[in-house]
Length: 295
Image 1 (cartoon, rainbow, N blue to C red):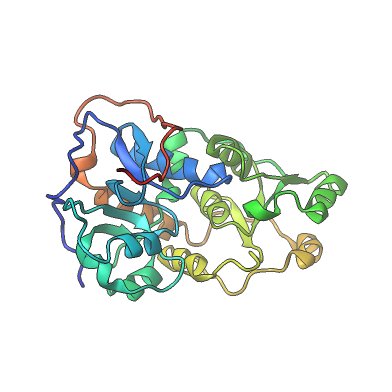
Image 2: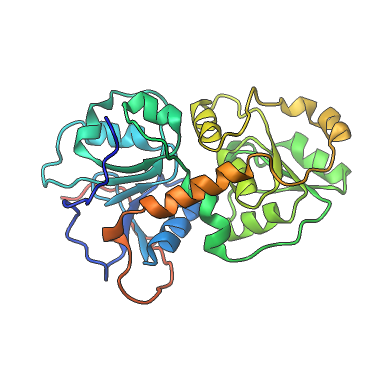
């Protein structure tokens, strides 16, 4: 399947004056949900509101396409076709659902290959977060530790950060604004969270991929391939101390040009019918929205 130059004629009944209904997976990892709504609101210049996976007009960012595959294996009863912009897969799925959605962009070539989508453009919307937040922190000498949400309270990491004044433990359960400000101020990031790698790349901060445990590795390789980032195997957290001793200052990211290309692709592929036709609006979120099925 070759990606078309879609006009997305079968949008929901929402208009450009309404919030964009966006699906992301609710989790205590606030950083993940914040990242999705902030970059979407920035790209669209519109208010963004969470909605359930069967009703949202847009899937953007995150490893969530297996959810779309489950729900849209058959055409939706009301004819709705969600738009996919920068999302990826967590694991392989039956790609038949692709005929029932509109694909503007997928996260990376691994997702594209598994879905049978032919494209030379890829990108994770999280790469726009520095633009969306509009601030540039001055890098300090500190080193950021960004574990995934399940390991934010790891006693070993807490103790390590307490022993070494260079280290700052960054909790992804905080808001995207807080996490990104901390990431942007670091000289280097060690992270097992995919969004940690993405935020570091967005701010031009060098980073090391740490072992995410039992989390599927497909999303990491998918993202890395999209920006031509070399990624072999994750570093065990137990080896962090030795790696720190050998860490040397980093300059411009060697794959910075590929990041810029992905950022440009994200802007050019964002669905025109979802863009605001009026002045800029503040990005908001309705915290009462859930995935509760509608009657």
